[in-house]
View (tube, rainbow, N blue to C red):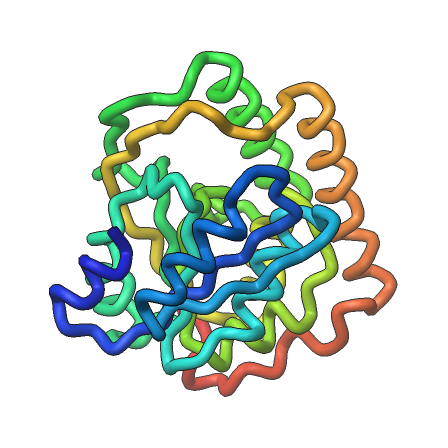
Length: 230
């Protein structure tokens, strides 16, 4: 589906598939797809290292002027690529799919426990990490390549809170962030464990503040002033 869309609209592209310790036949499926399309590459991790580690590996290995990652279930329409490119070419450094943008909608909403978990996490993000980005966690974002390499090169969180960490670093550095609306179609089968993963995510939010206080992220304010958000 990704290749069909990207090829159909005429974008030069590559697709990196990061297999983070799968235990099914995913490797053979990826190998079959890669054999039929030279624009498809695979990165395989054994054992599982976490979503943050997987996305970081993919973003740092990717080529091109604009980089984007999305969840494999494609619950966010791949047509959002055009909106991301318009934002990035128009002067933004980062474009993020935002479930809480006023123009977004839920075609198939997540189940109630996921919505409650998300609401609590957003409240914690606003108070611990960043207050002016409505949706740090949606699993689809686009970056100018130099911005992605800098931010993911600094990031340290290996699991679900990596998104909040990268957006925190971006805001501290003054990068311009565009939230893009879309129509969400929730796909069952998530590996998220609500109670355990919620506690781990909250722990990682605290780690972001501690890492920053200890200077572990290095300089965060070295962006050209002409590019700073205003």
